[in-house]
Image 1 (cartoon, rainbow, N blue to C red):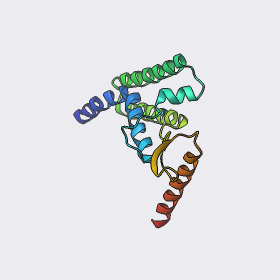
Image 2 (image 1 turned 60 degrees about the vertical axis):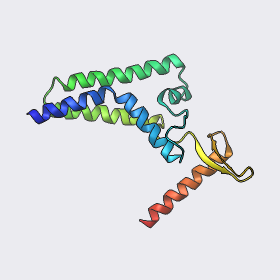
Image 3 (image 1 turned 45 degrees about the horizontal axis):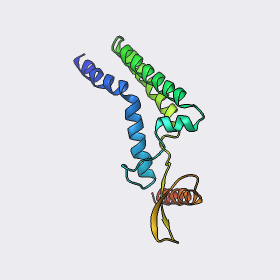
Image 4 (image 1 turned 180 degrees about the horizontal axis):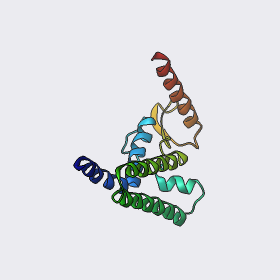
Length: 150
């Protein structure tokens, strides 16, 4: 029983801090996938993606608050129920958060590192730039090539 309590006491703060953890983790993955520095700023964070979805700033903030409240309420509930229900609540919160992150495309690159043959320099391109599509296709080809080698 003490193992369950210890595990619960570790998981609850992670659930409560879920939104910033997901936002930070997705930024690292997104930038690594784009082959740019994880310190490079981009417009792929949760609030940027919500605004791109058509929400205004106030609506985006309210959605983020609602997500945080849902996670916090779930964390509070986990502390009050037996183990099978804890697992169920955690699973529902994890799947819900993953679905929301997938819907917002949080793990898809917003910037791409591109070598400009004309200027002979590396530059960052956005989805508005035709070079972005070229880099996306090249990344997909590299991925398929690695997959076929396995």
